[in-house]
Amino acid sequence: MQDGKYIKLYRSFFDWEWYRNEHTKNLFIHCLLKANWKEGKFEGNVISRGSFVSSIGTLADETGLTCDEVRTAIKHLINTGEITKQSTNKYTVFTVVNYDLYQTTSQAEPKQDPSYSQTIPNNRRKERKEEEKNNINTLCKADADALLEKLWKLYPCKKGKGQVSDAAKMRLLKIGYDEMVRAIDRYKAELEKDSDWRKPQNGSTFFNSGYVDYLDANYEPSKKKTGSKNGFNNFKQNDYDFEQLERELISNESVHDCNSGSI
Image (cartoon, rainbow, N blue to C red; front, side, top):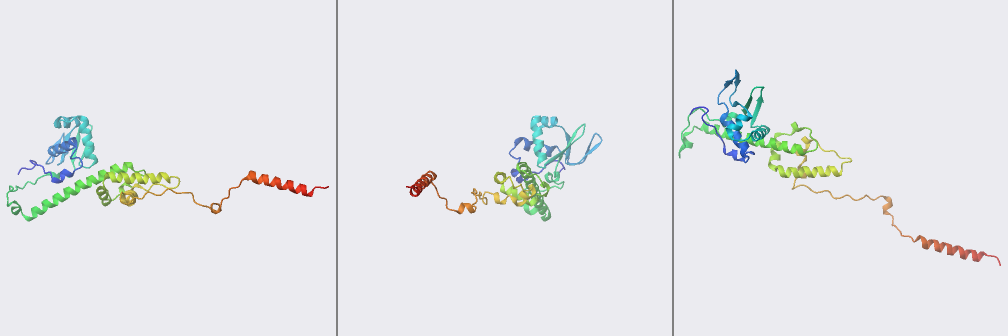
């Protein structure tokens, strides 16, 4: 098998977040096919394996996309860690991250037939399984990182982003974007009600574990607080008719004057 003749795509590619975005998916596959399978040179500079020299206009011509569609797709791929780019004043070098995961080996492999699994050496089958596992982990990690980026923009206190662990990001990925948005909204609503004394947690604290109480299964809306009673509220309140009291007082004074008058 000739090196660089083929690329590999795993079935986990179906689960990639950009799979249903035709422009981003097509551009990424184009990058895989266009990248150097061995080190090369361009204008005296070394272009490493997995990289290639191009431009927005060239990629648009090669893929049939518009320049704006290419720019958007490149932004997607950079944000989720599939590619990187480095520009000079003359050209741009695009690099496929983890390029080797998508490459076949130079060693010839037997054609598939009913006994195919028996003809591949055990160490090669183990290597393949390890490659597939690594590729799935890479895609999942990219998805988890991308999800945190989206959620981070919604959270009020943007401190400690680098302290959110990979394990915490994977938990966020399992929970999903929609439920995490609801959790953030609930937390922000509580902060707004107590804004005179309560400040938001650092982002690192919230996304590592602070969101748990605000998930759908755990959240209990706080009850509306009523005014607290003081000592005066405990006394029985009496209603007095002050006009009637005044009339009775005047009447009593008149009777007293009559009784005490001289003959």
